[in-house]
Amino acid sequence: MTRDLLASVILCSEALAAAEPPQVTNFRYEEDYSYLRDPSNRSGAWWEILKFIPLSESREVYLTLGNEARLRYELLQNDNFGDGPQDEDGYLWWRMLPLADLHAGENFRVFGQFISALASDREPSRREIDENRLDLLQGFVDIRFPLQELERHITLRGGRQMLGYGSERLISNRYGPNVLQTFEGLKAYAELCPWRADAFWVRPVKNELGVFDDRFDHKQALWSLYLTRHFNTRESGVDAYYIGYEEENGTFNQGTGNERRHTVGTRIFGTRSKWDWNTEAFYQFGSFGEGDIRAWSVGSDTGYTFSELRWSPRLSLRANIISGDDDPADADLETFNALFPKGKYFGEIGLLGPYNLINLHPSLEFNISERWSASLAAVLYWRENAGDGIYDNSGNLVRSDMGSRARFIGTQTELLLNYHPSRNLEFEFAVSRFDPGRFIEETGSSKTAWFASAEIRFVF
Image (tube, rainbow, N blue to C red):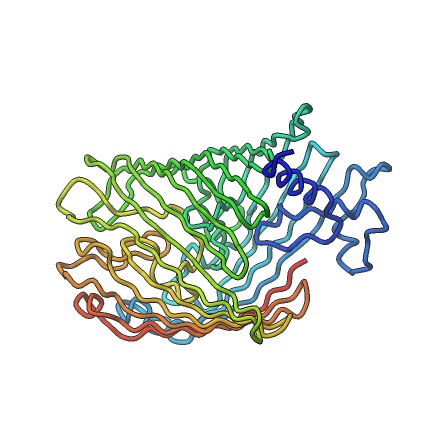
């Protein structure tokens, strides 16, 4: 048996042999509680009775119930560096994410999850990431088709669903803000250890503030073929993918036009000894209005853990180069589009998104105890191209270039503290500051931005 084949067998056998609680993730449908079918695997935890509710004598049909309740306070002083209306005393977010997961044998499943997200004292106005009073967050059906000869399977998933791939630089559920990102359409995936292959065609769901009024956005579409190959452990591997995207009336510093964009990319990630790495490269092409798209980006996160020291500090450096447009008067577009990136991409303050940027992001993380962790970080930002503006996390133009040739945007610092007393309860506190650079000073108000947040999350 070759080394690679042996590694793949180990990976698959580990997945099949799991007889302990799965990790609670932001993608709740990934949690598998089928191990509770055997009563001897139960530990007596209070939540186990809700995770495997048998509905047939054979226990092949069962129901899993769960929920997340999150309360979060945020205070942002000098949003957009003081330009425009301001929220002086902060706002309160709260949300509930109840779910039900029905399994009928190994090959059929129905998953449903609701969202109720409210914002209190949000000024000057509520945004689509702030509030969704009550709606279906996810509702999909899985049908699994066994591949008898390979002892593997292909799963077809249809309906409303959250997506997340790789480091979530391009496709994410936008977990940090109050309202998550979800999609509607078809997805198929196959686990062929050590490979996994995904293909999907979806439209993003457009959040409305009312009750059961969310619909997919017919002006946008997203499709992809995504391959992952794991190596000796699931923490190491390589991704290769194609992502297609189209939008009517996309808007950039250059203007507004119909956009059809294709992304090809690859990611290498892994750990070895005390080192860890995650490096990704993208190239985009297509059309925007009457012009062509040519854009690119390279991102990395490299760390070293001093495991022999107290608190096992991890020192890391993230670095990104993300292309911007060189001439707004030219029909061609060189601004990279991050599509549907993770929320709070560069930190909790969330003023900038991954468009037309060069940034360096050193950080130091500490595991103070099994329950406490902390991190200190700084982020330096420059415009990649002086002919383009800066954008927020959703790709909205924050400031156009306004004729400024300055590149330095500013410096961000952040302290994050996390307390995780149990599997079900988590507290988080953050403080951030953003000091404007020359580009901000030359294009409008340039006040220092301050941010603070406090969060409590209960999940089962």
